[in-house]
Amino acid sequence: MTIEPRIREELHTLRHQVRHFQGGMVASVDGMVIAHDLPDIEPDGLAALTAAAIGVAQRLTEATGQGAFEESLTRGASGYIAAYSAGRRAVLTAVASPATNVGRLHFQARKAAERIGALVDAPARR
Image 1: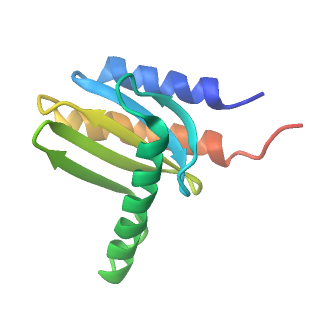
Image 2: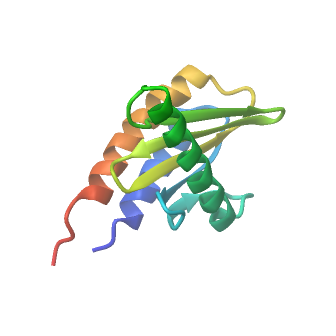
């Protein structure tokens, strides 16, 4: 059984838990889309950009002695893009409007990333 439906459920749950959440995506750390809920954003391009951004963020945390990468938040004029480590092999990317409560986004997305990481890192069943 594929994990994609379970990850899509997590993304839909985030949409219901966080007001002004515009969409989310889970991709492998090397930029391959696993699942997404992005109505107006091309997921393959976002996955590639997220992988590049995570690479830089990982180097930043290592270079400054802050430990392993956990999350990153980018604020643009029209909203937020947040990336959360989801286990060893994936990243959760969340897109939200400027009206989003960033604290709530972090709280809910961190929990979702933990559950998604467990799904992605679990050994495949035969």
